[in-house]
Image 1 (cartoon, rainbow, N blue to C red):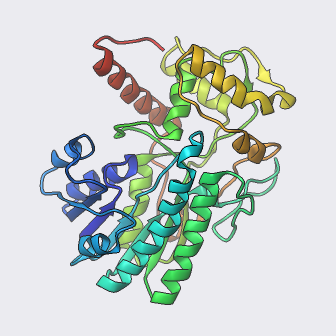
Image 2 (cartoon, helix red, strand yellow):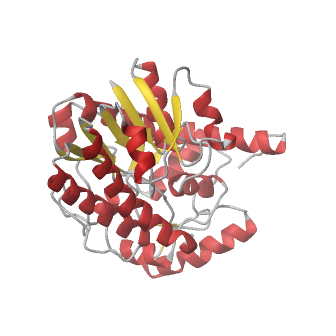
Length: 344
């Protein structure tokens, strides 16, 4: 296949490009700035990748990037929970950026567009409720990232129907695993845990994890097979934060287990504790008040049944392996930055 990957310097984008090259496809990788060596150096190390500049707001650049392309993987996005100064940029990238991608795909005759959406477009459920599937959409848009991804995907479907674009949406959970050059909010959570940010207490919350290698596999299956609609891509079991901490502690016993479960009434104070950890442990900020209100009394609860039945996808990477590989990259970057290994 002749393919284009947008957002090719991101965590998912880079791993997609790498796998596509290894699989023998002809790959074009688009980035915001092709002259930014910090963002393109890893891509330049992959043999045969054509790097082009294509900003999401520039339809002319996007059309040029798609010229002669059969399949577009639209993975470009802005992902943030604790940086309100980026909220507008995030919404514009998701809504206007996805619309531009769909319209340009129609203009250039692309055979299929694979849109990377997110499980945040799905509603959380009450504890014990059956899992939601791809027919569900969240109505709680109070978190800017959730609003961006939900409005972006819904608008993309509207335009795809209007322009006759063959589009498939992949809805991954929080992506962990190797291959990232900079943290995402999902990686931030692992780093915060590894630094001991939850040693005093852990809330009874769960997290919709998936490894980047399994997400790449889902994208390739969607591109290569005759399929349509939305596909949830998440682990078979969505672990609690305590489950994640237990796995991290088994990987490295120096990572502390929590002293006790955090009572429900304390959950609303987590953003304040998060800021305290940021000051004392130099850990990343990981939660916002809006995000905690969205999670209050609810669970991440999504079914990956459809992608298994339709595309034959299976979770291949265990949570523990994914966490270990994520932690390894974090520590390699710390060592490279400071010249010495640092214990969590």
